[in-house]
Amino acid sequence: MPTVSVGRDLLFQALGRTYTQDEFDELCFEFGIELDDVTTEKAIIRKEKHLKEEDGVGGDEEIIYKIDIPANRYDLLCLEGLVQSLRIFCGIDAVPDYKLASIGKESMLKMHVKPETSLIRPYVVCAVLRGITFDEARYNSFIDLQDKLHQNICRRRTLVAIGTHDLDTIDGPFTYEALPPSEIEFKPLKQVETFKADKLMEFYKSDLKLKKYLHIIEDSPVFPVIYDRNRTVLSLPPIINGAHSAISLKTKNVFIECTATDLTKAKIVLNTMVTMFSVYCERKFEVEPVEVIYPDGKSYICPELEPYDMKVSLSYINRIAGVSLEANKVAGLLNKMQLHAEQSVSKDNECTFIVSVPPTRSDVLHACDVAEDVAIAYGFNKIPKRMPASLKPFPLNQFSDLIRTEIALCGYTEVLTWILCSYKENFPMLNRKDDKSTAVIIGNPRSADFEVVRSSLMAGILKTVAHNKDHPKPIKIFEVGDVTVLDESKDVGATNRRQMAALYCGATSGFELIHGLADRIMEVTGTPFVSAGDNTGYYIERSDEPEFLSGRQASIIYKGKRIGTFGIVHPQVLENFDIPDPCSFMELNIESLL
Image (cartoon, rainbow, N blue to C red; front, side):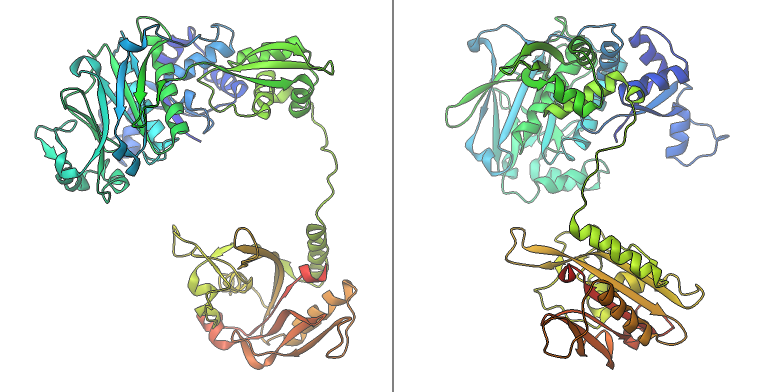
């Protein structure tokens, strides 16, 4: 969950009253957020620099509240949105009426999009905040919201990049272009010299903050760039803005542009920026629109601040929320969550609400989101506890549980291992060769330990023994879980298989015990032992798998198909996993027995 840090005194001043820590903690809980930590600016600096409490640091002793918010509530990522939502929740303020400034299309600022932008970042949305008044706290909050959006919904600027500019330093109309880097030249933010875009990439490779974004465009033959009418560079998205149009505490008119690879995300980001800070405009909650004109001649006006309507029935809300509320009560609760609800009656005389969702609530996508807001506003602690309706388990899961019980009764302890493993563990360490048609390989693994989706339970079981080799012997463990193998007949190209694996590790190999366990499983599933070639039951035959000792292994054949193998683990495999004691292992596909 994202964490928002706000000054306690500034927060209470904006809320219009003071709270004790317990009172504010309770308010946060009622609203569905959490007061995570209470600290000071000096303590934060000491923690970041790994200093001791007696070490002198800058900053003051202002109390800082760190508040955890839901990841989809982008409107709560700044003090302004947090205060507005809490004041509405407490019944102090009404839901704001966001509107576009009433200006003619011919008077609007225009952003012309060049066709080359489709090669790299095809979308742009814009807006203007006129007559805004900044002080230091508001300015810092404005910048901080951009950073939090970049890290959250913008996915580190890969989906959306936000540019903010002092409109009084630039002239429209604007153009959004994509040019070779050698043709783009400007002075970037906080720099004193002019750079060409290709040289700028090299310059920022040593910048701790910006170097993480260079990969987004550095290999592209063209870079996105925004110009004003005088060919002044506003920004080189998603890397850096130009120094010429930098905003400051004195800025009165802010031009906001969001370039993107995802238009929906760009609209949400723009709406969040303008709705949160239009409260500081000369005309409260009013935003000046901008016309974006595309190469095909089509144009649209942004931002889109009109609420959208959603039909939700009262019975659905009560059923999902687990309460029984009257229509008037539900309407009042929704209003506390910034959702205006009007009652209507459907054709079958069922009470239905027309819920108006404001531009600040991009998280409300479905009727269940409306029901969730009713539950939050009503209070989770007030919802009566009840047993959920009985759900019939899937046959495979039910069968797996029965198998687990039987193996546990045989004295084996269940373990749970990772579904992902390293390539070496899945193949070379088990003496197996990769035939390129079995295992699902992770395309871009975050770690060498998680490169492959396991195609066998064996590696995980052996790793468990290796990490517990000092445990008193014998070690008898088992696992029932899924493995994944490639399967071209499936839409996703792979399929899961439910497997059962067991291992015995002790002073002797325990081959006869693993053999006996295999027979016990077949017995309790009602599978008779038959002679070779008989397809009415199961039999065993000699196998030659590289992970087992030659001549001390067997395959389990059921209805003519091999469903499993058991045997003494090969000494080389044991050495690979650093296991000093002999082991016997069994693995079989229990789906085939269902």
